[in-house]
Length: 160
Image (cartoon, rainbow, N blue to C red; front, side, top):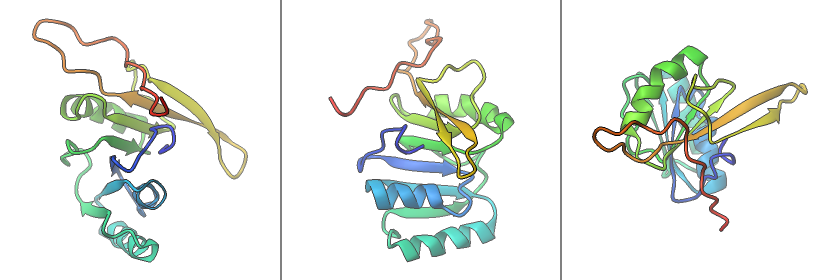
């Protein structure tokens, strides 16, 4: 997911429903990014904090016990989701409204309805099952009276 988002050390990743914190911790450890995990289960937050200490990334990450549907994600340059399709669809309008243009949203398994991804790729799990990962880029702000673009603009390659 982080590779598809083309994560860099300049990014701030918000993982909604962060569970044990593995995505946020990986973002910090392997990419040098900052990360925030949003999780409502206090035991999972405690587990994530413990894992972050063990990984030596506590200065780059934090975990908040919050409702992922109400949390402020506006500082994020990347939002990761491993949620049910219904949750993605509920979050979609808020993500498009609150994230800055160019911010990336990455979802494991589930899409966002008619919001066409900028990229999608398959990954293979340990059992050999194929799973899809989707990437969207928040479009530029819509001018008054003009409709939003029907599709997401492609992500610019950082390699250029």
